[in-house]
Length: 119
Image 1 (tube, rainbow, N blue to C red):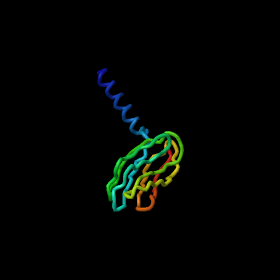
Image 2 (tube, helix red, strand yellow):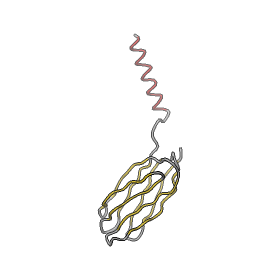
Image 3 (spheres, rainbow, N blue to C red):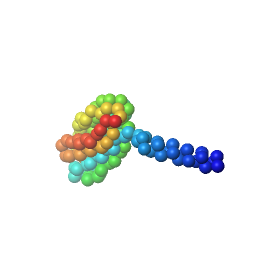
Image 4 (cartoon, rainbow, N blue to C red):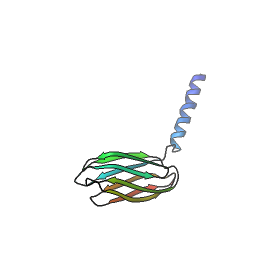
């Protein structure tokens, strides 16, 4: 009988944790290369960290998830097929935000779209 009560209490606590929205806040980002050529040294800087990929093929998308720790701006950097380096600023981020970011790289620049919410 005691094991049954312990199991019921454990299940109740797990259910309560699930109902209270216990989850990690993260941002999901897609980087689209819409140029006709591969791009290299793709890097995204965001508050307190950065990530990147060595090469992104023409027409390809790179997907990444990260957690915002701190507040500040974003930017994307890349090198095009002509070995020209590009930097385009993105949105400011605030710790605790979650949602999605999309950056689309074109032959001359990059655009950003954000769907972020604060919790």
